[in-house]
Image 1 (tube, rainbow, N blue to C red):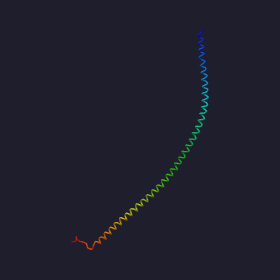
Image 2: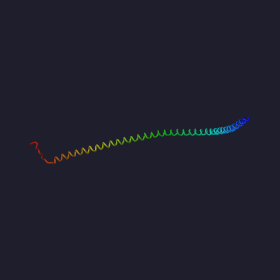
Image 3: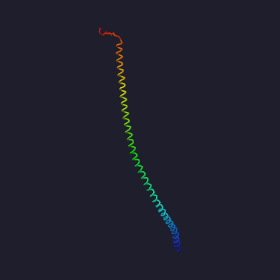
Image 4: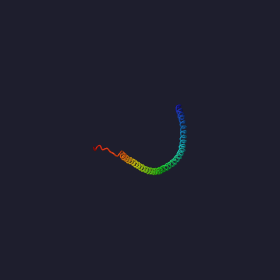
Length: 140
């Protein structure tokens, strides 16, 4: 029976490290569970903080969007008002330009008329001053 003794001894030697490894695995699992619980509590806390921060940022974004919309509306109204003022000013300038052009046309018309009248007068006077006798060669 010498053979069964070494098998029992072998079985005992093999089972001893297995029980040590099993104990270590149980300890590691317990530590992991404790770490998981503390990490879960921390994660839940972080989640709450992040959700509060998200709500605050979303409210700020909405406020800025509303402010931008009202500011854009005010700016649009101001630009429309400036546009109307500039159009009125342009219309006045156009009317002044037309009046100035008409005045200039009248001035040149008068200058042209005076030139024609002066030329006719000078021609008439020059014809009279040229002498009393006329040649009537065409009547001969």
